[in-house]
Image (cartoon, rainbow, N blue to C red):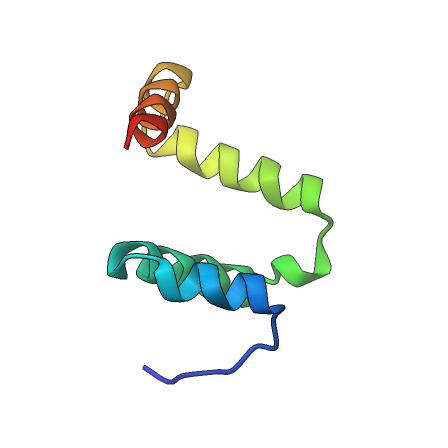
Amino acid sequence: MNTISIPVEPEIQAAFEQASEDERRALAQLVGLFLKEGWGNKNLIQVMQEIGSRAEQRGLTPEILANLLAADEQA
């Protein structure tokens, strides 16, 4: 695996540095998917719809999502 550099604002850098290793891996996967899947050529709505469709195909239900979000808010 290779490393890339992306210019970001100082607040983004600070948030990244404070993120857990799992959060950093998840972000790296999202960036990889974004670039690999050609999502850079789509608008945000198209990307979000595709992410939602893929999540549903993998078994994510609105109830599971609500539970995950509630658990994250409590953490």
